[in-house]
Amino acid sequence: MRTHSRRAVLGAGIAVAGSGLLPAGVTRASGCVRTGTHDKNGMDLTHGPGGDTPPGYVSPDGPEVAEAERKRGAGPLRSISLTAGETELDLGGHTVRTWAYGDRLPGRVIRVTAGDRLALSLVNHLPQPTTLHWHGLAVRNDMDGVPDVTQRSLAPGSAFDYHFAITEPGTHWVHPHSGTQLDRGLYAPLIVDDPREALAYDREWIVMIDDWVDGVDGSTPDAVLYEVSGGRLRHGMSHGGAETGGGGKRTARPSDGPSRMLMGARSRLLGGDAGDVDHPFHLVNGRSTKDPEVFRARPGDRIRIRFINAGSDTAYRVSLGGHRMTVTHTDGWPVEHTDTDVLLIGMAERYDVLVTAGDGAFPLTALAEGKGRSALAVLRTGGGEAPDGSTRPRELRGRVLTAQRLRAAESVRLSPGDPDRTLVMTATGSMGRWNWAINQRPYTPSQRYPVEAGERVRIRFRNHTKMWHPMHLHGHTFALPDDGPRKDTLALLPGRSVNVDFDADNPGLWMVHCHNIYHSESGMMTVVGYRKK
Picture 1 (cartoon, rainbow, N blue to C red):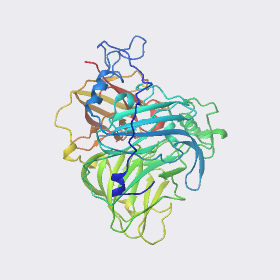
Picture 2 (cartoon, helix red, strand yellow):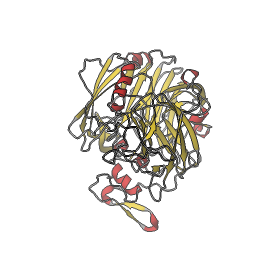
Picture 3 (tube, helix red, strand yellow):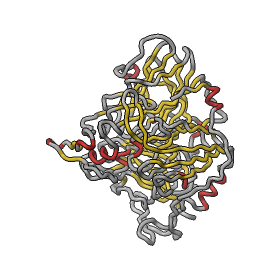
Picture 4 (cartoon, helix red, strand yellow):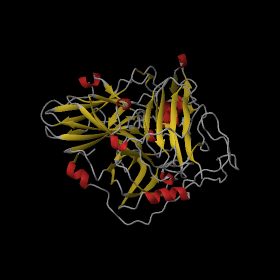
């Protein structure tokens, strides 16, 4: 991905154009009666007239949503189009047939400024329906991109116009919310610049890290899901799935490529099992270790690196050889500056760091935590032999920084206060039974954990499984305990419980789910819904 100078970063943007785009294809939630019963975790057990949707909830296109959007203001309009389609990509010495945005990986940067309005037309040239989710943004609810909850899926050969205001700066990204599409090439960075940027730096890099399986020796994410689930989940596949081989190890049929089941991946940092899927490649900005991206700078340059983990099943331990990193943001929100040698970045998490470039050629290594493989990019400011994929900077052996070691910048801390409501969300399920769920209830679009506008809401995340789960909340950011950072994605380790608080200030229906795509698509998702007043 291209390196930006500070001047180019602030001068860049999507061309401004007039637009008559209107929201379209929105699912209208039914219900108007405020009644219901709840289980011990806070889930609404009431069902609507059709037995599907509980009554009495704010609709994604309701007046409450429109009023919240009106209050965000009407700044300059940034217009862009994005096409999702089948394509051929060179991953750096290995060519695959896959799906991507605009025939490139990652998709081109979507760059706006806080206060802007974004109008994006998504054209679907895929063989499947799709949507677009704005990970980390508090968008209006009918633009959130969740099929059967906030909008209808976008059928092949059609287009959908997303149009909303953006109020908070930060490092974010876009991806589908449809099946296993995220584990193809359908993702792109979304950078919201701060018009009052406080950081000083000379250059900026956007570093998207990804685990890759699609198109390698016949593999597809759908086939991988079928294999790891023991044949329980097909998701529309018309070809053969997994069979059980000797010793209980599942193997894929030849038409699906080799087995991608990962056995024995262990990580102390992740509390045990590190993942389910043996991705053959790990990428930085779409490039493998055979032909990595080279970032060029001058010795002494101050560089802002925006890390985004776009992987589906892999946490990464990340270091820049020969350099210390100063963490300035996580999930788009500022933190008290903290120095570290190494970061642990879970799926969907983002970290911004500052580094001062040394003289030479240095490895930016993202080690697939517990899996033994790695991704690579190179910082070159002078001469010297280029590092290769086998390079393991000594910094990787340093003390690992995770979100729990950070404190939110004082300017973005939640105001003190006790929660008005507590929702308990327990990760349940097992690798053997492949019955991933929240509170032992596999996902259905009609699920509702009720909140009311204006409440301080606490989610008590608990993990009763033997695997870790990156838990993500749509449409909001939550605060970790004890003035911890503001985030939208949290690494929930086995046997642990974490309380997070958020202010209910964005009405609608919002997903909460594990961002391991193979866990979420197996049932570890649910919905927080605002009640009508």
